[in-house]
Image (tube, rainbow, N blue to C red; front, top):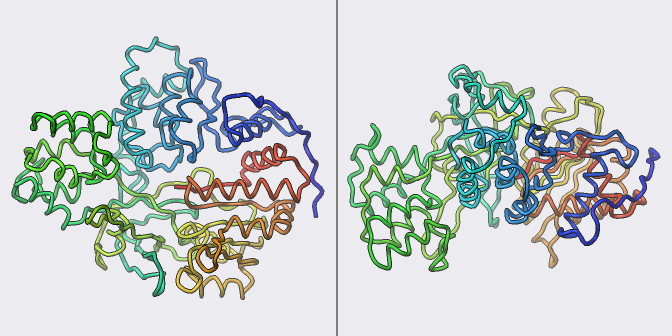
Length: 537
């Protein structure tokens, strides 16, 4: 095993600082790496996944709030006293998912310098981000003018490059067309989930991609839901709205969940008395009846039954239908012109009504073989295979988090990469939720997949997750890391990713003979060096 030097324990953030233990440990590790206090090469804020902010307004460029698992209230607390654009960044969902067409720092900078007027593009952040951005945006004209950095000034003064010049299918503003080929259910009888392997043909668009990239899909709303909404409006589906029929506009152009604040503002204008006050409260983010979180557009119309907004005003009050991003689960090197996704169909019941995930059920049931749809490739930022094909990789992807790692393995096979590959996969039940079972077992038999470690949360009396399997195999995992392995995680940002990182810190502490703070610093150093990468949502 490679001998690794143990860094001294360094305390930067005092124990009485206004942070949780987890936040304090993270900040200690980050700052140790940032300034090279452990003897390593100091890193720039752009390294370690942190965002480098343009200088010139007194900001230090650090972004301790850049953590997708951190609640917005905590993020805003960490951003107190920072320039407006940095507080706007803290309001984002911190996923750098690209769904808005930016990363979090660039989106906030663009709003602050008024080159981007849309405040509702952060899909993962939802209403809470949009409301916070609206509140912060009102400060722009009140804030004292700060001398911007050269780069930021140029961005503010230079006109945006015409979107038409962007290569087709490389941005959400200029999508290409792909052909839907097929879907197949990955779960077997007895599963509580409904997960599909979905395939597309890119040959006509000539789009290509690299493993680690994401695929943007412009889905369409469910026609049954649209027709129910039209009935509640008391309108005809052929009514013209923005040069389309009302039905076409509701299917293709606007989001029907959740109900936006502007819809409640509209409803407040056409109601009276207690209903008006209730609509106004909802428009301001209040929750008079305790049901605000469950109100999609149809539920809002039912709640204020009898109100019938004019169709054009109604459509104007809704948010635009955003594209959805999915991790690509195929390799262009293995199957040129083809692309696949691994998609969970989202269905749930509120009250007596079944709700549907827009894009997931569009891909899972509504789109037909041979149909065309608008798509684009979102390039990955800091998530991809190591340049050296000999470097071993550890991949941790429960559920649909397996998607990019199937792509990694197919790519490593197609390119003849010699590095070892270790996959941690988990789900609920081994007999019905083992995605790509035959494929993965064949990879293991051939030697492509060096290790396959599984975790099933519902097979036994006690729930068992991928982080539990990691701890069980901690000594071997530490050995791989000591040999230079790169580690990747994909999946839920709020719980899984944090649980996995916590397990990794524990493994480093136990088998690397480090204190907890030193282990946190070690993991921060992995991130700095690009050896720990995440694709979370």
